[in-house]
Length: 464
Ligand code: 5AD
Ligand code: SF4
Image: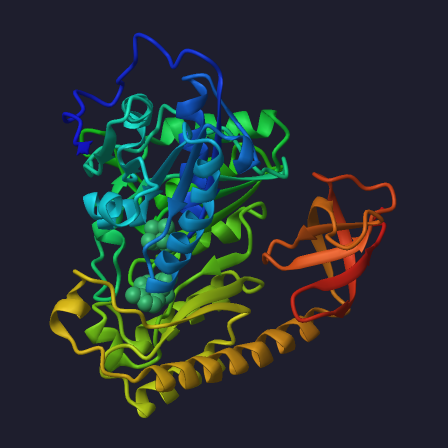
């Protein structure tokens, strides 16, 4: 059986009794950076209830999977993983398994019915209820809490950083999305857009700096529409927020994601140009190069508008790298539309791209109104052409970096050898170089001498 707990009386719900003995929680995170940040919020909420984190599911009392619903594949993967994790229950029947995040929000009670190993299902705006739900589940009452909120930003919760390199951290600045792109499940799984109080953002950033972090990535589904009413007739937008974060310290790098081409303003670009510690890297999802498809997708811009935004970036922040997201085989896409996507890629010369086959998501506008009529083999062929072209463009961009000196923020030993450090340039490119006496957290000037498909390789140069 399951029950729906009563609606929350307020956002500052506290509990008179914490869970008695210290228990262990294992969290596995799928999907976007926002989910990584949410897992840190969940860890903090459970930490207050004397749960300690473990990286080993076989010793956990509570296993949580923070899920993604963006494509069908993401959900299939989670179901496979749930089946694997269920084996832990065979050995230790007392443990609890919870599904949280976007797939929990999309499927609600259906998840308990279909996946018998699941004890609790909790959506992205209901994490404050996790302790109560865990307590009920421990006494045999399975629970579902998937209420979406218009206000919840978890602003007062200090995230507990898990799997951290101690150098870079995510800071969530807003939640939800109002864009309603025709293909996208996010507005349904994460609700409407709301911005987080800038004071709490700045406080979190200062604390991270004090703890030794050297880079923050400000996260939101559409950062350009960040908006906080600071007083009567006064408001703070994203340009002002990012400037305030940049001013916290010149020693702290600032990144942000994701921008929306219809909202990305020149004002933000001018702030970037004025502050060298705001990283020269913009993620600007194009989705398609065909204005007809963009219109069907309800993206709110044409190909020409998109290219105008690329030009603005190149003019105002010339050394900026640009990455994108592209979808192959959206409803009614013809070969001609697909060719427009390939030509957009040639024109824009993206440094990097995330590339996907269109996957119909139940309940979205596209699922309700358009036929998913591009056969799977054609989607696959188009996706492969997009990937092949992007690989060429990325390789050319990397070749062009050879001989240049970049300031690299060292993040830790390289994957292959302790003798090398790995870090990233302001443009978000991974660089590996001999460690010498450098430590993680150092800014190092590195001369690039070669490149592999994913990495630039170089060595430190003394600047003075
Ligand atoms: N099918 C394929 N890709 C999708 N994305 C979002 N929804 C879908 C879908 N239904 C992609 C978009 C988005 C990225 C996060 O995922 O490119 O920018
Ligand atoms: Fe992130 Fe979207 Fe996946 Fe939710 S559905 S985890 S918002 S990518």
